[in-house]
Image 1 (cartoon, rainbow, N blue to C red):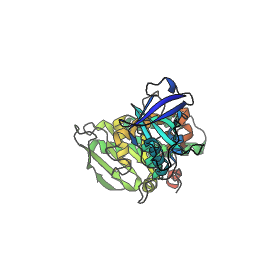
Image 2 (cartoon, rainbow, N blue to C red):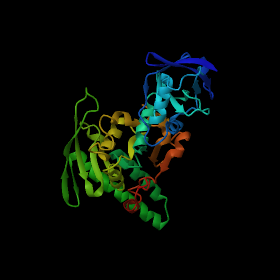
Image 3 (cartoon, rainbow, N blue to C red):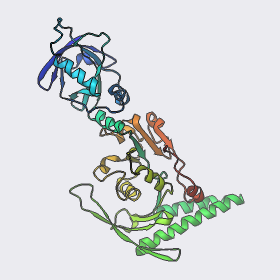
Image 4 (tube, rainbow, N blue to C red):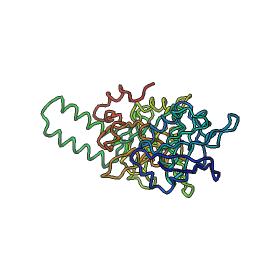
Amino acid sequence: MIKSMVYFGHISIGEVELWPKGETNVAAAPWVREIRVDRLSPPSERCLPLAVLHTVSSGALCFVMESRPSPATADDEPPSSLVAMHTACLRDNKTAVFPLGAEEIHLVAMKPKSNLPNHACFWGYKVPLGLYNSCLSMLNLRCLGIVFDLDETLIVANTTRSFEDRIDALQRKLSKETDPQRISGMLAEIKRYQEDRTMLKQYIDGDQVIDGGKMYKVQSEVVPPLADNHQPMIRPVIRLQEKSIILTRINPSIRDTSVLVRLRPAWDDLRSYLIARGRKRFEVYVCTMAERDYALEMWRLLDPDSRLINSVQLPHRLVCVKSGFKKSLLNVFHDGSCHPGMALVIDDRLKVWEEKDQCRVHVVPAFSPYYAPQAEVMSILYCIPA
């Protein structure tokens, strides 16, 4: 047991007895004899604060503290400031917050086992700075985090070079195939690649394409800057809405960065669900192993009016993972905006995620518009309950 003094701001509000719990080395902490609360948390509207902290606290209970026994007092004497804070936290579903640099301790008011008058009991939980408030806001709104992969989950994008590589690989495979049905399937797949390669070449050479006898010319789309010291970018884009095809240029001044992008047909339905009027269901994030400029443009095509992730949030909510590393929810939520336990991941691959996060991954079939286009037309991303 450790004797400690509790302050609210710079004012002493009461003396407590503190018992360290779990594996945390509280007894040796320099702050243990002075608990300096600087504010109360926002109220929890749907869950008890204890339930919220069980969700977001990676560690267990840090300590238990109780007000020190005091001499008997008259019934009409007002309670101490510590007891008043305890009463307010219980009544309003709030916690008392004790900041510790990059972390903070939340004091959860608990009803003491003994029904002593003017007695306060708190349980202490340590969490990253700001995480409790972020998750509390989401829980109050009945909102969760959702993390999307890009390539082969929501889109398939090809350059001239990648088209040629895929066609060459299929032709080599075709030369060794003897089954007539497989040969027929490969020939159809090669034809689809060749048609899109031709369209991409038209876009690169002349900023226009011909599809179904109709000519489509580029439209200049303004890409807002992601930082104050950056200038807006103008991209030449062709959108073939009925085919869910978009042609764009990652670097507008370099034609070799042109790509033909196929959007997963089910994306429109899913996006409509995510932005439907009414309560907000999800906070959206992106985690990809692609290069950043490419990833930013792919997400712009998927969310053209920035309704899923606004332009201020985007630099922090689009996370690119370097080759050789695993995807991690702790990395995605590096700013403490959400807890991994409150997130759902949509990806076509499971093993690219750290093992501890794999239970959060909803694996969808890889988007294969060239191999099985009809399957894509008929499918829906069944990943979120209505």
